[in-house]
Image 1 (spheres, rainbow, N blue to C red):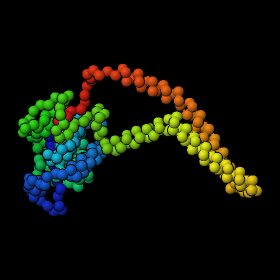
Image 2: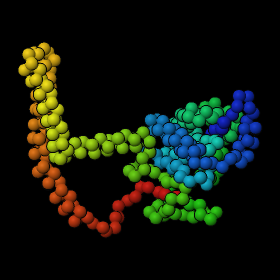
Image 3: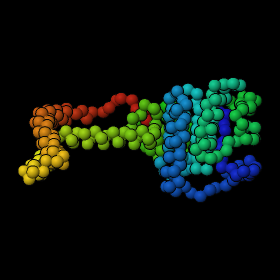
Image 4: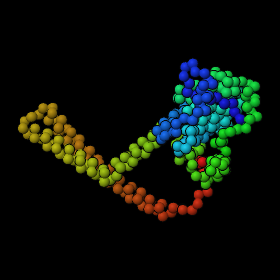
Length: 304
């Protein structure tokens, strides 16, 4: 087992006995809004923790409304564990003796969870508010207790099916409540901010490719021709009428600039046509050589 620090919502002056009793009372069923808000809060906790950690991390987030847990995080080496529930949180790690380095990780995790949730930390080993210290006697006793949490780094993740604990193969598991995602998994982004940045980058790349399309270049070229002709015609009419002020030369300058831009776009379109033909033929060849055989590569994602 691990040295555990619990975090609960607590009103000023409220006794911890009342807090623990309130936690035993069943709360309202979690709805979709609460689930989404809780998962977002867990992702913020995760992002801040990753700034402090230098070791691999695995996480799990809830995808269904049939439980009270929103997210789990576990490190590979120190075995630091953070669990966020709908009305509480838990930070734990194997006790390493007085002055162990993992204690600093626990303190940092408690501070981050408390800051993101507004909860207060409680040390059940000593029965009082957690002040950042660890009781050595209680910590040594915790080492002999049996773990009651799923190990996110286990080769097989247990699934809760029909009220029984059944081992589930990582390669064939079906997602019942959520998904365990390791640092090496590219299919499940760990940080929503990184996912948004990736989507924005993909959209920018798509727009850039569209702008380089020969047909799109020619359309822009003709648009520039139209603008160039209009501005040049206005400038020439003003010049023929004897108006040689700065505004007349501005119209002529803009018109010439637009016509030069149109010529450059038409030149780029001609240069892009051979490249587009090569990409089209290359895509056809790739499509003909796709291997539909089984993929024997490792899968770092464990579902449960």
